[in-house]
Length: 505
Image 1 (tube, rainbow, N blue to C red):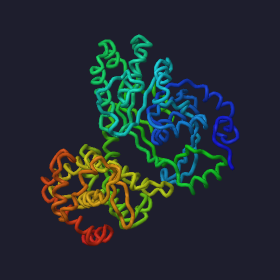
Image 2: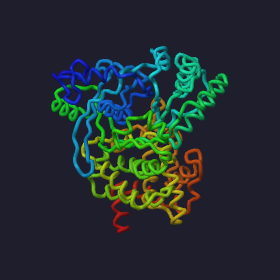
Image 3: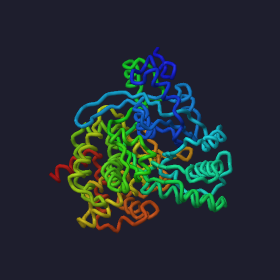
Image 4: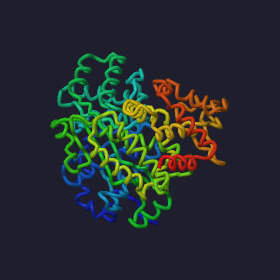
């Protein structure tokens, strides 16, 4: 039995954090309030903060708000906020396999049980920054009282905290915060500010507060990019713990690649001083270029490939990329259909270089990135990530993109519910059910009773509730999707991909 990662065992476990340095790190003030304990936040913003602290640069820690459950909170308490990142994969052509013990998190507070403690943290004079990652649906205006204990939605919780801070510091300009949402939404900072303004109006908060909110708090749109699948499988976890000599119930695996692009100026850079210790943090007035590269070449490729890969029998991204046929589909989709149709000007050499990095990231042999997890909210991801590319492709080439059509056909086949149980919908692959984790799953239940692929495709593509537009208006697109769907049903996904590959070569 190995010792557990904790503050008392740290000197025995880590050479990186010596006993003296550990004492300094654990005494640092709480400068960041973070909504969420998720692995992405731990693997990216908290990683950068930890790295800077160890170099004596930022010198601040993170207090985390957990909105649901208590399981992870207890693990954080047992481990004194410490957790390990296993950083594994290719970096600049070199295979990297290292572990980092992160000490950025000071404590985790439950919104359900410790709301008064959270409000008290709002009055901390050392506090400078708020970070959030509450999924894309988290930044929405829900008209509710911020005086509940606690409020329900993330924006209401945040507004309650800001209002408490405003009262404690009597609206002083210096008490404003830098607020950085990391949710995958375009202009997420602007959208969060808009939601908070509407919520302040609903709660009839005084005009002096809304003036303070508007003028002295800085909402920075940002983009995060790092594949952090989370806990390793049991075999890998056991192997790593044997190698390291300690056990960690919060261990996460991540890739070496990292990017946190934040919209800001020199004033923001001064507050976010951790940026200076890692080239993965970019603070710039406009992050559009970074967002479009990631949203289209990485995210859209993932989304168009996930259903097809899962239906082809591949559980993980690395398994699919080890198959030459599927690897060819992914590479051609990204480089020849998505890249030229990115709806924002980016030099070709920059797109090509980014694409090469993405393909290396997909091939990472250490990451168990599950395709099924990528299918979560499949419909909304297609709408947000792929439709602008589809529109631009037609604008440029006036014909259906064959590989994007194949991705849509796989989506329609994947979204075929054969069972409903407790308001959850399940598809079937072979003899096994899989969860269709999509808010639109109910709309597909019974759709396949129509029987005809042409009818099914037409109904799905013309559903403006899904896409915000009628996709059958793209000339030839419905026919292209239908042809591929029929091939999937008749011959299987891999056979149809092989047939298309042979005809295209």
